Length: 437
Image (cartoon, rainbow, N blue to C red; front, top):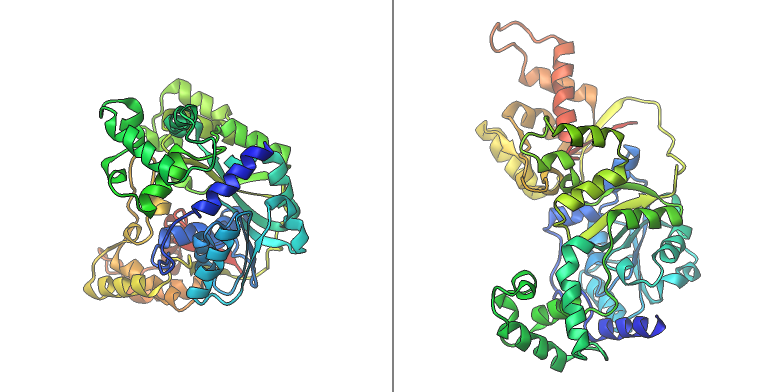
């Protein structure tokens, strides 16, 4: 296994991952930032906003693109990156320096030695790493040891069902000797030649290849071949296996990172009327069993990507106070505010899911989260910051003072109910966060 691990290190030294240009930024990708913002999993678990002065670890930081996403999604956080590839670490340093991220540090360090840093973390991002590790439980245990009691850990593995033909490709090219040593230009071109010559209806080519991977080698093509057809040590996993690893490391599942895509009911034409046998089975099933059913029916996700934390983690103290409302940080930005204002002034409804898609995406369909002009006006102060529920009620009454049919004044309790229903509708997509402060 040490030999394989050394081959993996050499491969990532040769081709740091991902190969985005140094100047490219994820700053405009709100859905990517939503995933990397600690607010998202923290609120899903605790129904509170995360603490200030975050310390975040990118375990297996690669070329630093995800570390940059973590920094942009969590302004002011200290970003710590580790990787066993010196070339990757050097590139990660240059990337964050280029984008003027001040509070960061990177180390050439394997994950099993992360304790040597002497730090504990609010959020650990271990992305595209665990499926390459020789002992996933040992890796998870090490990361848990440096995770704060209320901290969140993100990990993922390759999906056995979605990835099967890529594993077949790796085995095929391995038998040809292309993975005996660290694959470089000769091996990459050989893969190209073989895949180009296969007939288009061949399963391996039909599923794992397209014409954009042909022609002169460039960074994009090289990255695809190395990370798919020639990836050293690649392995696939199932939902039951990943839950076994969590149990072995004494970690508690929080949620799938792309959680809307793991809704069993959204795979059916009539979600409210599932087949009887399935409906009865779901009533008795655990969360892991339901997720496994989804993956068996529609294993389209490349990664089994999830958040977890300490079991029965020390819950934050819930303050006594009034109900408060805020936008998710990734919705509260200048572009959305400008669109919001234009729709508000034009009296037109706004489809929020056009500007933050992930929370409304199901496996085979995309829901639309639409709100009308009165709702736009009532929630406008959230662009300034957190507002109390009662202040929003008073604003609602100013915008909607009379019943549109009877012209009688709208009672305060009716206004509260209408606003509450709106907020609960938006909260299911995490467009708003409801807390007590």
